[in-house]
Length: 239
Figure 1 (cartoon, rainbow, N blue to C red):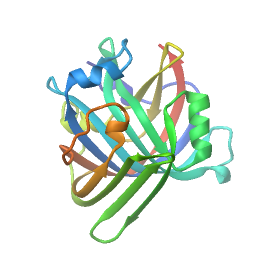
Figure 2 (figure 1 turned 90 degrees about the vertical axis):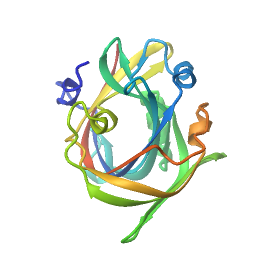
Figure 3 (figure 1 turned 90 degrees about the horizontal axis):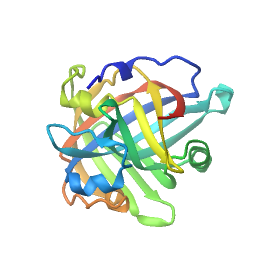
Figure 4 (figure 1 turned 180 degrees about the vertical axis):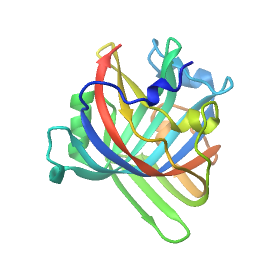
């Protein structure tokens, strides 16, 4: 499968720009049979050595704006997405989102109406000191759909090489969604993630179960961190 072409900047006008900061990538191995019914039938699960993964990614969004909005009106807010990895007929490896939590009500409405993405309004926050980072999110009206995580950072990792597990998990540039029975794909463009090792010291989460998947009931199997990237967002198109 071609995993390098999606990293290239697509042609045509971009839909907007964003800055993604302080990303924590939490991954669990999950049974394929539990994941398959929750993903649109046209999409194939993108497996690592025959095994499926679900990823939970809490981070901060900065400077979020569509292309027509002046920079001073851009928004900053926290976001957390729950996702898995898919492809379409052996091409276009990307992500499929089960849910996206955001602290901005305006951003939630815009993403639901304009992009058809499963965004939810949440109460969110983060903090950090010299030793530890803390991140919390609780979905409005559904207190079980939450995440409370504390973690510390480790050493910087070498740039993710194609074929590595880190490249498989982090370097994802296509997103898919299904709306009204129509499958659509969008693309983002950004530099490769500067990645770090990380270790979770505490986690309570209910977002995986809220999406209809079995609750992991254990710490994440894989943990990575990135300081962030500047992102160009391109429109969704029917596929």
